Amino acid sequence: MRTQVAIIGGGPSGLLLSQLLNRAGIATVVLERQSRDYVLSRIRAGVLEEGLAGLLREAGAGARMDRDGIVHHGCYLASNGKKFRVDFRAASGKSVMVYGQTELTKDLYAAQDAIGATVLHGAEDVALHDLTTDAPCVTWKDQNGQHRLECDFIAGCDGFHGVSRQAIPTQIRQNFEKVYPFGWLGVLSRTPPVSDELIYAAHDRGFALASMRNLMLSRSYIQVPLTDRVEDWSDDAFWQEFRARMPEDVATKLVTGPSVEKSIAPLRSFVSEPMRWGQLFLCGDAAHIVPPTGAKGLNLAASDVHYLFEGLSDHYLRRDDRGLERYSERALQRIWKAMRFSWWMTMLLHRFPEHDRYDRRMQNAELTLLQSSDAAQRVMAENYTGLPY
Ligand code: APR
Ligand code: PHB
Image (tube, rainbow, N blue to C red):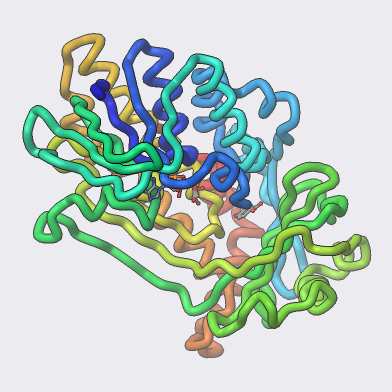
């Protein structure tokens, strides 16, 4: 088999890149280890920056988002029961779109099917070869045996646990990592969201977040110790703790219900540099992980895809390789700004076991500054709604 761009991973990064390249007349093959159903079963955040929403429309996969997505012009922050609103539009002129990642992935798969793109599921033992030559290739096996794909370029869109990042020699790779001393216990419930916009609540008992997927599907989180297991938390215990951490006017309106999904996710900040090695380009979670506090994971995957799509289309359509040569540098510039923002929101809103009274006063002072300063709210709004590509 031969193609122009081999894409490892059929998550949001791989599918969006495949869709954009195929619509530009550039041939791709997506190799995904899991089944489509498995990929679509993942529950992931869904706060889309305007840049990502625009890319989905450009890819011909934005119609359902525009129909079913909910535009949010602000969010609430709360500290020990007192909440205030950050008005994104007033502070930055931009908004975000609330639309579940599962729905976005469904839309991308449907768009790929509509143009007859090649997405191969059940690809096991994917391996990358000859990356620093002009004839790289990918091998894998499936129920039909062993396979080999010749290509010009390989996009490593296979997430944090994928093989692409590992294909870059360790002496070349620099990893930057911070692991946070807590996790997020998340509950999906078929209940009306407690607020019309997201509420990020700092509390002495720990952080909580009131989010949503649509007007009858709420996504709620509480910070828990890393030692907690999901089976330690009954639905009632979760709702009691969530209610205790939310402002009173919110807690009294809360409609609880059975969890249709309940899980604990650890929080980490991670970046692997460089994002290119020979003809391999890393994209999305394969190169970086952010704590979910700033809702940047999916949105950073989108800006990587934007830069890589630009570089690859310049190569094939305009015989210009400057975009590919600058890909890693350009992507990392935006990634580190989002890393800072996600780290800042995480440090601001969570209870850290090692924090003393002085640290907590600093958190309170930062929240008070954010509440009272238009300049501080502008910086937050510009980062939350997405810095320019
Ligand atoms: N071979 C083939 N496919 C693989 C391999 C492999 N060795 N390893 C992983 N994959 C697949 C996974 O099954 C997954 O479907 O690569 C895909 C990677 O998708 P994501 O992990 O979703 O990463 P990405 O597409 O970059 O999207 C980032 O998804 O995880 C969230 O928070 C993250 O919102 C962010 C977004
Ligand atoms: C979510 O809806 O899952 C969500 C929203 C915003 C975040 C994190 C998660 O910052």
